[in-house]
Image (tube, rainbow, N blue to C red; front, side, top):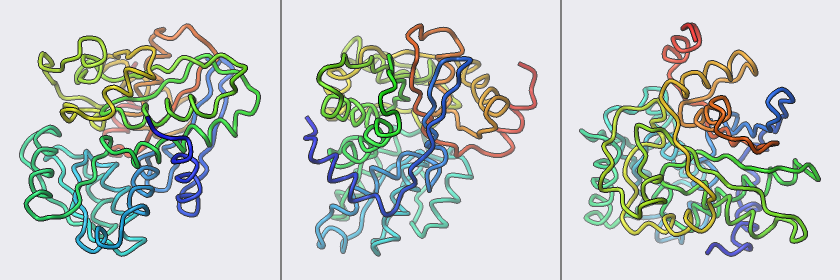
Length: 318
C-alpha cells in the first residue's frame, strides 16, 4: 500500500536530519537490537514526522499543523517544524511524562493538555484542526508518516548485510511503525529469500491493535495504565494502518507490565541503555520466552522515560 519509491524518497529526504542509529548483536539471547532510543529526539517517531513536514505544500506549512501525541510524535514533529519554520500545536494527555512534554516545549511547539487519555486527546486534536483549518498530522494514520517509519527498516537492512533474521519484533500502538517496516520488507527484501516473520508487541494493559488484528474490533478493550504509554489508546476509526497491519504482521503478542518493567531493567544492566516502556515490549517478549524464532531483530523504539521512574525500576528487585 506504500510504494517503495515513497520509502526511498523519504530515506533521502530525512537523511540530513536523523541519526543512523546503532545495530548491535547479543550472542547470549541471539538477538539484534536496533537502538532508536539514540535517535535525535530519542525515538523513531522523528523519521515519520520529518518526512511528513518536509512533504507539505507551502500553504499547509503557512497555516500550521496540529497533532495528538503521547510525547514522542510531538517531539519529532516539533523538531521537524522548527527546522522549516512551521508553527505546531501538540495536544497531549494529562498523563504525558514530564520528559516528553519538556522536549516538545523546548523545540518551540505549543502544548495543549487534555483531561483524559490518548483516545480523548486524539479526538480533541482532530476537532481543533478541523475548526481552525490547520493540517492534522496523525502519528500513524498517514501514508507519508508510514513511509518515513519505513526508512528504519531500510537502514537496518543495510546494516545487517547478509545476516539472516527469522523474526522482526516491533512495538505496536497505532501501527505506523509496523506498517512502514512491513512495507519496506516486502519491497526490498531479497526475492530469493523467505521473508522473516513480522511480529507486533504491545502491553496487555492497552491491547487495541491486538484486538483489531484478531477480532476486527476494539470495542471490548478495557484500558489500564501502562508503562508503555506511547502504545496506549484506541486506534483511529478506519485508520489505514488497520488493513496494513493485517497484511504484513504474522502475529500481535501481548506482554505484562511486570515483563516490561523487567525488560527496562535488563536493558540497563545488560547493555547500559535507557529505554522507555513502549520500546521495552519487544525485549519483554524475548525475555518471557514468547519468541522461539532466532536470530530475531528487536526495534528498540525510544528512550524517553522519566529519570526517577527509570531509576526506581532499575534499582528494584527483579
